Length: 174
Image 1 (cartoon, rainbow, N blue to C red):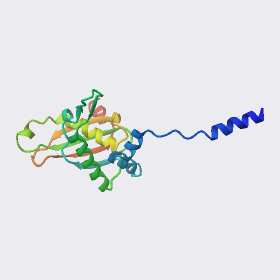
Image 2 (cartoon, helix red, strand yellow):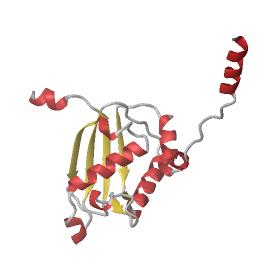
Image 3 (cartoon, one colour):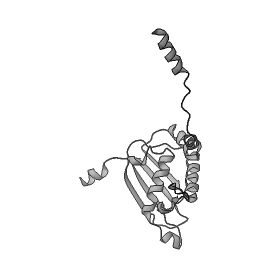
Image 4 (tube, rainbow, N blue to C red):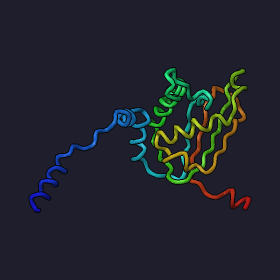
């Protein structure tokens, strides 16, 4: 019996560790993956303010593939995420844990193109980049979102304020 247990133990010791899938390795090496690892080292804070370029509309962030495998990120969206990753890699800021609230203050771009933008289409790409870069654990923890156009028009861009969520709405309107 002891000999059989030993051989089982030896067999278990020689089983190679599970191979990581290429997708997981690629995700870890992607700009978001690298930033996410760095963000885990950042201190937890109550509030963070970030400045990003104008995100693509949620309608333009994804595209259908030709081989019917579903939807993938558009080139415009990938470029925007990489730009946001660069901004975050240069910044020395903390991250917010747990339930959070987000304020998106957007400068409407000048011209006809800016007049056609919907402020609500800025929410999803912004929450996704916050999650993908580790500034928040997951966008499902977002309890409150405020998105608005700033008074002045300009080059476009957004200021994002993330703060630990408190039940302000319930306190004010309960």
